Image (cartoon, rainbow, N blue to C red; front, side):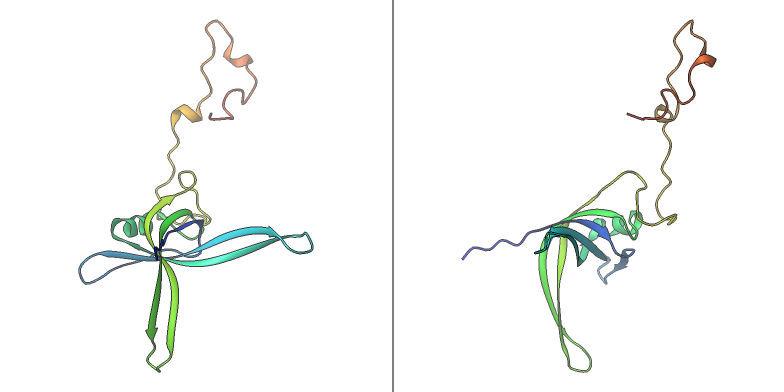
Length: 155
């Protein structure tokens, strides 16, 4: 029988990425994601349902996540499911289903995140083409233009 193991997630980070390096020098980052789903219940009311997913990133993708992402960052992940089992020191058997990411895409604008400040991300630079009003026409009096005209929408 054929099988297919692919997962696509679009959600927000629930915590800052945990970057570490294994003995071979390969970077590994564990992240938590919250994926929201909205549906109507039996009485017709909208109900929000949140699913929390553990994701593991490897290599350069893990390093990028550690450098640029923080709690609340929107993120697109594509990968595969992996079922881990282990035994604790007191003999209890544990298991966890997680996603091993093959692809990560940061979503949203430059510097967009759910947390304030952060300090890890470079500050968004302000491009001059978006922060200045259009130059006045030749022969017109620039002082007679209405305040804010032409400089409020950057597209």
